[in-house]
Amino acid sequence: MTDTPISDESGPRFLGQQTPLPASPGEAVLDYVPNPRTGALYLARFAAPEFTSLCPVTGQPDFAHLVIDYAPGETIVESKSLKLFLGSFRDHAGFHEDVTVGIGQRLNEEMKPRWLRIGGYWYPRGGIPIDVFWQTGAPPEGLWVPEQGVAGYRGRG
Image 1 (cartoon, rainbow, N blue to C red):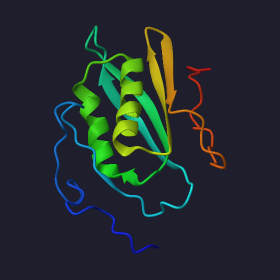
Image 2 (image 1 turned 90 degrees about the vertical axis):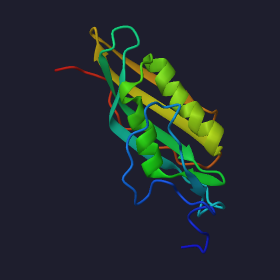
Image 3 (image 1 turned 120 degrees about the vertical axis):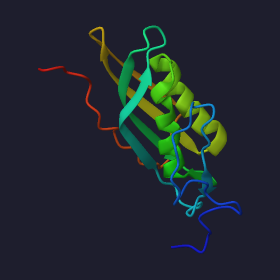
């Protein structure tokens, strides 16, 4: 363990608090705290197997399994704020590509990791599953990057 504090002077806003879902992704606030292992090259993974948003044309729900991998820089994302941010998409209308890439870009712009990738494994609508992938570039030399572990959609067979 290190002596590095786990939050800045204001601290994470949501830990230990009952917090409603933000009304929209734009209103969601992501908390970042100092990386307790800034000298180490490592990968952190978040999996959201029950992610939902809305189709921008029909308003019907879309479901995805998101996997977010990142190599932290100076900060890490606080997991409860990430959960609330992802939950804010429940009533947000957006195409699969826009939602997946937008989540990755926001995390990258705010957190400034050494490397980030997101995989959006969307369940079929109209008989066609859509998988969307985005990353910031090549992973840093020496970073262990395991497969995301989500199989392509196979239906019943």
